[in-house]
Length: 156
Image (tube, rainbow, N blue to C red; front, top):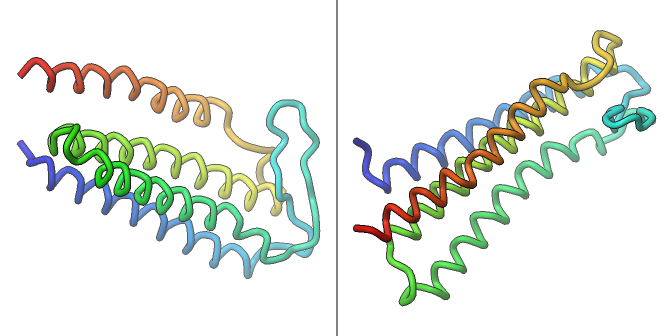
């Protein structure tokens, strides 16, 4: 069984890998994109938003990176503020949960970015709804999982 610190390091590493994949994919794809590209996907009956190719294409990779940074900063300051009220075990569980959820959000960002690239080349029509809803469903399933683990910690 991995220790809490090793789990956090492993989950953080996976987050870094996914951020790297997103940036590599964006940089590689950007040079090969046509002059007119989609920036928004036909998701719920919305019209696909197309525009001239611009650095705005990197908004998904930037958002993905900022999401991870913001959540890590929030959990860091939350722990500093509540150090006396919550145990380090609960704090580690919170970090683990946030890093795990961030992995699935990053998978959604990568899927959207991938779909935009394929739409720009005329290969796909949009996102794959089953994949998108499955990953989002996993995020929702993680909430009761976290609460069960938190309750189990309280019963120790």
